[in-house]
Image 1: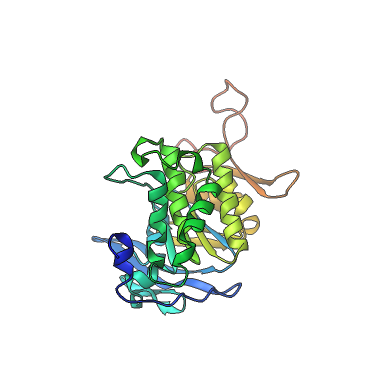
Image 2: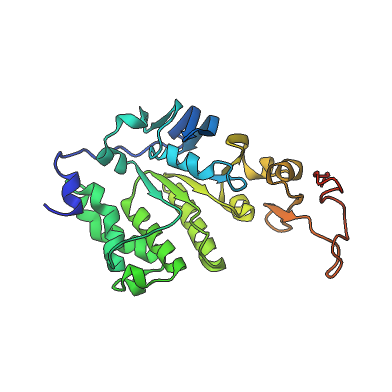
Length: 301
């Protein structure tokens, strides 16, 4: 066999067992990660469990994408450890790791104008040479249908809009059918409808037994769809737990350096996180207190 599939068929591999519900499929323990001279993550303790959606939230530069890359074993630990499927991440070969985790980076770029269907089909490469290789076309069709990209299956990837590319990239990850999904800002380029679509897919994958870790900037989406949220701040986890418990206005105000208020949705009870703005329209600086005082320090929200 030649091409992408040939990279994975030199040694026949067994199909990994599906994790049991609630298993800690990926775990970071006292994780420290350095990029150059800077320590980006310090002392991270976090697990991703089969059957749940874990949202990583926090301001720009907090370490969310770095943590996702470390959980994927794409970035090495300076100290501490990352385990995937019960084994140190570094102990898996690249083909073995590809059967266990699928990663969606922040941006998808291809140098050649592959048709959309072929891009999605790339997600099946790790399964070449396994007993499940025969389900490739079914997996590709299902992933494309879920992300609503079937209608432009033959279009070159390079001819798509940014949002369309994001959905095709997600379809590739879904076609991989790994038990651990690691998604870095999958909603950033999407409209309102498709943001909701992507998070519903995350919930469906968790219901099917996958462990899903997703970096989100939209706290409303995290509150509505995540089982747990880890709030990162300056390379550490400030708090982790169900959004209804950890999305608290005082904490979020301090972490984001932006006054916010949190209140329950009148119908669902899910937390709504709203920036504290001025008073009525046309009255800058009016309304309730909670911005910056004259010295530039945060006041309480």
